[in-house]
Length: 64
Figure 1 (cartoon, rainbow, N blue to C red):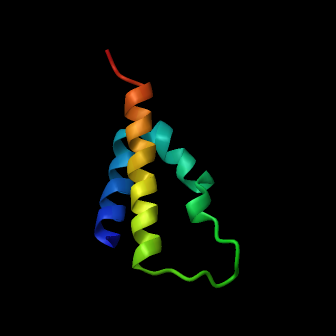
Figure 2 (cartoon, rainbow, N blue to C red):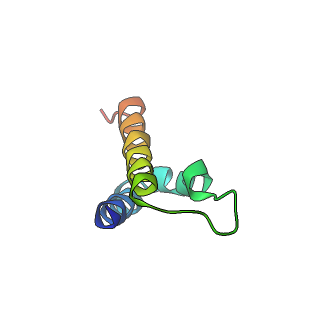
C-alpha cells in the first residue's frame, strides 16, 4: 500500500501539479493527535482518498 501511495502521489506531482498542491490540505494527512494510530485500514483509506481526488479532478478538468 505504501508503494501504491508513493507511486500515485509521485504521478500526481509530476503530471498534475495543480492537484498535488492540495494534498497538504487533505484531512487524511493532518492528524488530530500527536501520535496518530496508523494501520493498514488507515493507509487503505488514504489511498482510496487519493484515488478519489484524482478521479474527481480528471472528471471535472477534462482536456480537449
